[in-house]
Length: 175
Image 1 (cartoon, rainbow, N blue to C red):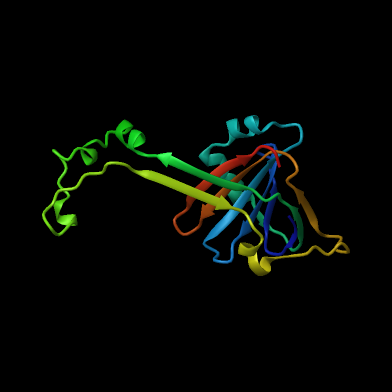
Image 2 (image 1 turned 90 degrees about the vertical axis):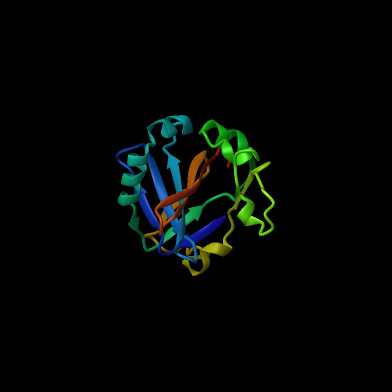
């Protein structure tokens, strides 16, 4: 993917050895943060120093740039998670036992229910469409353009701005 982005946020971090870019989606409630470790820093070293506080400071260090060329490979995350073992591990057990749980009011018929299985499926797919007007083909004559090339392993974080939550976090190991 080769794009020229107006309205992107960028920083070259002095706190951790990386550069980062944040691209807002059309809805503005979501954005994609890409954290690219320096060439001499492995992804595992970057992950080791990336705490919640470090991530928060990195987000504060991002500054708007007028013009930016972004080389970002398309990538896709698709995963299913069996949630019952995880819920049992944190002490949620009554939900799965029909002798203990009472969810009969949910049916309207008085028949009791319990949860037999719980599967969480997630899909995250990067495309140019969600970025809308913020990204266009680059202008090679723009001397002020910053180049961001995700041509080595990097981290990505999908952020929800209204509730300050991380929706997805992952790594692209073979861009």
